[in-house]
Image (cartoon, rainbow over all chains, first blue to last red; front, side):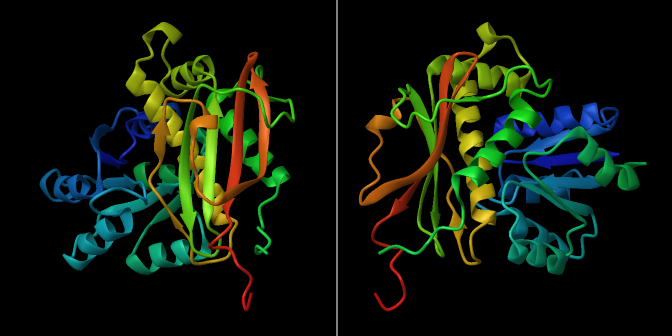
Length: 120
Length: 161
């Protein structure tokens, strides 16, 4: 499977990728986007099976990316990894069609719990 | 008078502890040891701003050595491999993580800014019309690290005040 990691923080992209490996998902094809606009473009061009996105990014926020993808009929598995986790954000994510919501800081165990059902 | 902020120092300490457990000290061998010294020195700092139901700044500050150590832990690299960009990105992410967790504890309707990184001491930071309302101050491997909250005096007025 192809997994797109979208985060404007290079450090956090590396941590997400490393945690995916620690959780046993390192054999998948991992690609990265450095902001929301790039994530949207890569979601269309690269056709990943799973998108793990930050919420607060320049150019286009994570929720905007999700809304645009769903608006275009794209059903890719999509969820958020974010330090922000208000009830209003979770509701907005669910209403926009998000599949999961992971709060930073996170652990490999949390990744396994969320991604095992998706990635097998 | 300001509204009462719903995040206290024990909440901040818990957030900081989670960051240490997840990223900076997953083995549990080098925790942040409290000093309770809000005047401890720093050489670099990062911050995020929160606006809305509470308005102010969350500031992460440390020595340069502690910032290099944090970057090495975040990026799984040796201390001597850490570049200035690695350190800067790590500082920004640390402010973002703690700031996001602070925001999550506030009443609805707040916005979190992207992080600002400044490779100068926290004492050089200028947040006009703010006051420090709390923080976690400690040493990590003998190096100073702090996370503090600065509340705006202007935008946190009580209703009808």
